Image 1 (cartoon, helix red, strand yellow):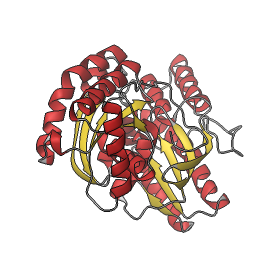
Image 2 (image 1 turned 180 degrees about the horizontal axis):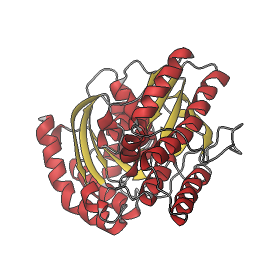
Image 3 (image 1 turned 180 degrees about the vertical axis):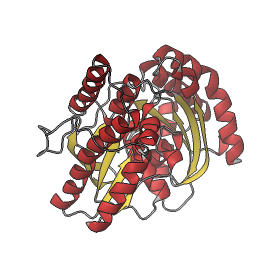
Image 4 (image 1 turned 45 degrees about the vertical axis):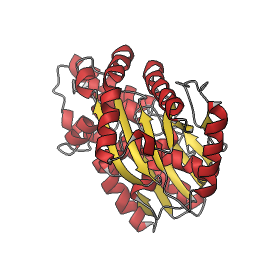
Length: 360
């Protein structure tokens, strides 16, 4: 019975989205943030509550999956109540529930998906599945209402690095991806070997501002002529440099290592993103994911895009890291296109990857 009611309501939302207001309650629990948001028409944030576990996992130097899952369980009900209170709405006002079902930590995803199923069933409203990676991309639709396809999108986070040619709300072409470590993962590993706290990205970025770019780690990338990325070699080169310096008893400038590492990592990313824009004659470039908060990237890429007459888009800092508002924005795209309605048999996909096809 639920499936039929939910499908009928979803189809009605799809038919009427441009003639009425739609309230989406979205849930994100893929890693170490428990987040619930309420969005109106997929672009206006009424609330976006984020309960972070960073301080919990910091002592371990990274996210511990079992601990993350337990904390999602403890936090999610309270986060829901806060999100509804801030949005000044009741559960009965909500038109659809959206939830991240991949990629991410298996146990963490299960908490969010199970919670979302229960809400959708109890309220008899549609349940929309959302690809976490595409959620990051859709964060820009919230803060930049002028962003229209086609455009190039660089997805850069702790788990993903990819260049996409976005053709429409539900169509994209995967131009390149990482062959090993994601860029955010490389930042975390470099920070760890330098003895810097987790998460490494913001710390390395801050330290880089105090250093000199005077160390060459990788002279030439084997992937320089493609749109694919490799950060494992750079990460390993940094680790080897630090070990050699310690063996020789020489002092290591943490600031200089951070500045030199960041330059090489970002240089590959910026060069390929701009090259993709030129190759496909596209004058819009967007950044998505946690690493899009990097201050050096924002500053340097803005200058280069201005020189190349490319308009650069990136989300405000609160929408760069994992949050439920971006999930709601992507769910609204699904309502527009009439896709991604799920039943109560929705399962999680922790190892989800981007595919060179329509969104799914």
